[in-house]
Image (cartoon, rainbow, N blue to C red; front, side, top):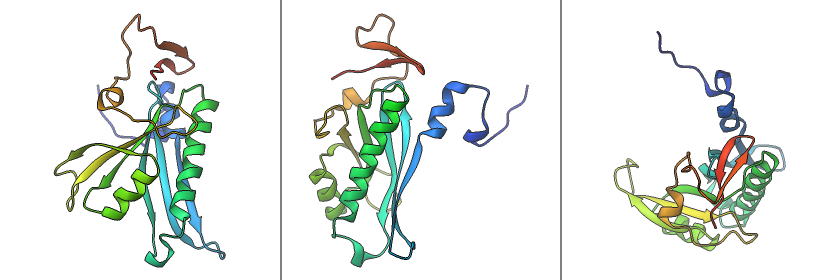
Length: 176
């Protein structure tokens, strides 16, 4: 027996994990010259539950903020998440992220975009209080309320769950 570490993209021993590697995208903001100005990075967080996580989101220069670029990047990312999941037989249910609760601007932005604060995670950030924010992807508007209980469903639905559906990636639960 041995234990070793490999990059996820190089791990082919369990093909059911491949969607996690393929389901990571970056939405880039560039100026007219193609120079990087910001990004939104998302990843498939749980294929059995149709969940994605926004792992990074920001615009570099403060003077480029509050001009609608962040909202546009988020709209493109949400469309990308829904399309990618749908193309891979996954019912898109929700997207979540961690935001700095001490940043009134960030919290107001996410709330205005339909995210709901589910809770706080003291000690997660070295500075500031991490706030778990989530947004429903099931409906066209995507702004439905997401409960902690709904977010907490496991990867492996109970046998006989009436909401369980077999997909090419295994059993998936689509609760509404």
